[in-house]
Length: 478
Image 1 (cartoon, rainbow, N blue to C red):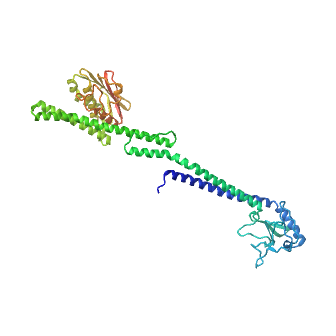
Image 2 (image 1 turned 180 degrees about the vertical axis):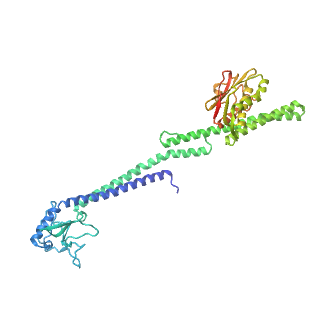
Image 3 (image 1 turned 90 degrees about the horizontal axis):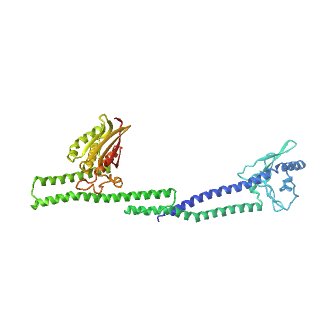
């Protein structure tokens, strides 16, 4: 069974917290034991001097360590060393081993409630235990017992863990039990808190997963509601921005298909009607009818070519053969090639460019010519007869600014913002009888963008439209 992200996050939080609590328990467990034993050991060490003095005096009186067998030292809180009376009825609890060494085997009387165990070991001058024992795997610091300048034996304090009082054992048990109960309570609290927390953290991710599924199904109107300002909130905002972009592109794609179909319909319908009229004998085959068919064919060919150019630009495969050339020379040649067309329509074509203006840039000659011709065609189609088109070019720093401004009719501010959109025509002036398909300015913008320039539309002082182009150059003069 596949585990959901909520449960995986829950178990991750639980495991991480559990490991941290376990580590804390181990540290505290060790600290309680070591700290308590260290405290008892410190207390015992402070009694050593008095104990050593008492043992030395007793040894000086007896002359040997035999007195320990019958009168063992007793331990009290003050560290005094009174010796008990002989108790022959109690068999020795600690006796030497078969080799008589007594190592690792306690030597001395049995301990009881009246005679609690003594937490030390007494050795003779040869460090052989005469009372007590050396616990296995435990290092004991031996302190010399000196009488009249001679070392008669050694006294070593054992670890307090071997001689804990029942009350001390009870105290340690209580502390450890409290530690375990506290850790268990912490784990329970983590379980209670982490699962709702995991669900809360995963909820926006689940919402985004569902919304992503809707987007993949084509529901581009899907949005995610969010209120947080953290990374999840930022992700939700980015998702909504992506969905909005996809919705916009989908609308543009559908509009693109509709516009293409609409634009192709007109010339195809005209061609079909003309050919059917010829076949039915309604029209005779004359040079005029052939010219009409040719005009519609040329119009259709231009539309297809424009669509092809835009498609290549969208795909990033529109080829550019850039070289170092004078942009002003390309502009002048384009103007001269259209001067006769403007004269035929009675539109004055004014060139306001200084004769010594020169701007060397890295550009594609044919694409620049296509750009300038599109702008000339645009003014030629939509400027009223008797009007004017003025073209300016000026170099400033590392840029050349080229302006095409014509006379009436003008363009509203609302329409001006959409002039570079595909198939967009200004109502009343851009119509199919006089205008094109609405792709000229779109292609022009893509060419300028490819040359790292800027193209914009403004109201012309002459009453019409002003198209301003700014392109980089690396050498120029006025």
